[in-house]
Image (cartoon, rainbow over all chains, first blue to last red; front, side, top):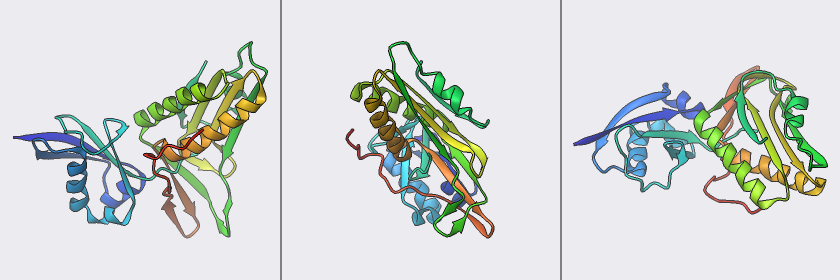
Length: 81
Length: 146
């Protein structure tokens, strides 16, 4: 069994991975934090940055269990204003 | 009368400022944040702003709700520009209307500080010899007090 999620990249992380959206299959019961680790391992260039992640448009605590269709966003500390 | 918006159009500061004015208020404090040409010695040609748009709108609304709880203010409007911005163009407007100005100043300062820390918007600075996505320092998980 697996869970299919959508991974979103913005700004510096989009530049590092060369794409903005990635479809990803993860083992059932994966968490936001474990999904995040899989992605960072897949794109080691991301490790050069201090990263944040958000699940379904909210900052993630990390222990949330991922469900089909979830949206995991990976980005650097914000710099708007 | 509160509003949180993202736009790729030029921001009309006066219009954004007047949109928050209700009859019980006596002052609106409006921040006009714009594109700086020189950061230290380095010259910026232009900026590009990008957002996680639905999340940015939610985070902006959270800031408005929190500010209205914590300060004696009536209304808040926030507009942030996205896309390519030339030097001197407005990137963000925050307008806070209050019965008395002191709370409006304090709330506006708190709002811009929190926006720069929590709202998922990023800025790319483009120079004559390269470009860089600016990375913030703050951890949005750590709330700052009002």
